Length: 187
Image (cartoon, rainbow, N blue to C red; front, side, top):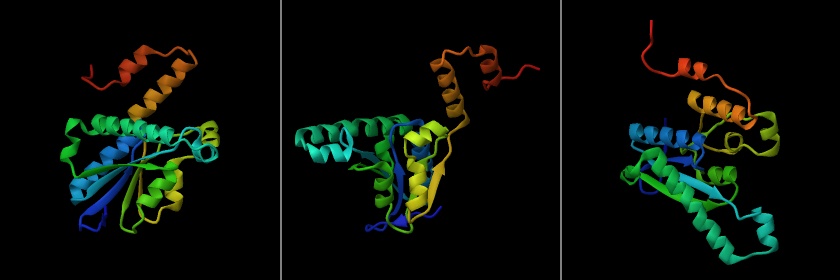
């Protein structure tokens, strides 16, 4: 993959991080691409004030805004620790917290033609798609640089299916989970 050269002469890969399983997979892929190409990773967490920008403009409270920014830093550090372990600072990685809608923030951050933008692309049902905008779809539609949308892993799909069954209190077959689990095969 090609990554952009920033002002200091190093290559750049921009990755969206939210703390979700999809964003952790995207972060892993971005770090792997950076190792292969010698690029620098820019991990970006986008955040918005409580109630959104419109509500904040109607009744601005600077202390609340500062607290929102502070609280946004916690998921970013947790995601970096979860995905890369405690040694994430050893990687050529820069982390930023930027105020705004996630898709717009990522597209504006990866503003050079040669940047590589990496986002997690989770499966979404019709209802979720109707209620929530997809960051990965926004990035694919509006980015001026190449976008790598990392699909969810099979484990993530299985966990989501199990979570849905648990939410609706449907029974699940433990035997099927054991059969699907990796390990020594009996023959």
